Length: 171
Image (cartoon, rainbow, N blue to C red; front, side):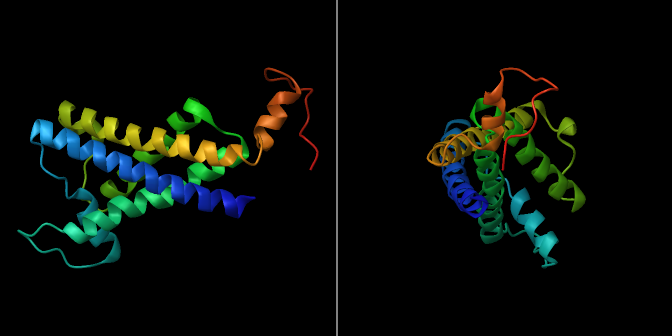
């Protein structure tokens, strides 16, 4: 079950990153905003590869952009298989995606904390990551639904609400 959840999640993450990328391209055409090369620079630093001043790391940028989307999608697949589905779960996943980016970008010195960014840049990043998170969630939830409600949802179905006298579901 869990291996299938990881595989389903990586597929969902790929769909999510493709939709996010399409949304980014549309937004860039409309606003004239250039590509960000922060993901590529972050990957170069994480891998200990040399940076080339004056040159944009296009291949590294694509690898990091797609790679993070696919790898983090596996987490959303596991969430869906466990019964964490729907918009609430996708909002939780959105926070995870944002946190992952910020840890890597800030730990490498490539990025700065988001509360220091220009507000427009922050809004654009939040919007694009929301597109990724909710698209990935829709796909992961649909794939997981084929396997049933998941253990967390089965537990919740025992009795509506949160009660201390409702024990775990049988194995």
